[in-house]
Length: 123
Image 1 (tube, rainbow, N blue to C red):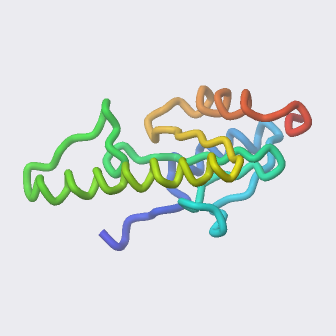
Image 2: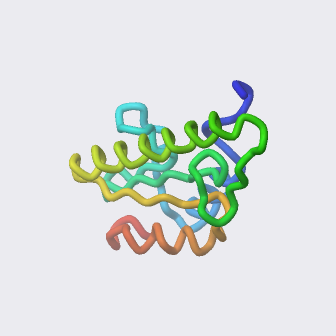
């Protein structure tokens, strides 16, 4: 498990590529923000998390393992609680938070993100 990526995952890289191609500029993995967001639009105060279906409990795609089911359910529950807590902290700090599931179409996800950005951040 320790070999699994927590940043720069394929879904995250695909989304970043689309955003960059649209002329949107951002920072990644800001350690000074709760949850260390995957993508950060500093001037617009928008943070993006790209959530994996298994680890964050996607209601559509997550499959409960049969082996050690209680452990895994507890792990996902804790991840979801942590996500909600980080969202609350970020919102209280004045940030807009958006979560993108790894299975979402990247163009549609980029459209959702772009709608949150003021005109000055668009090309």
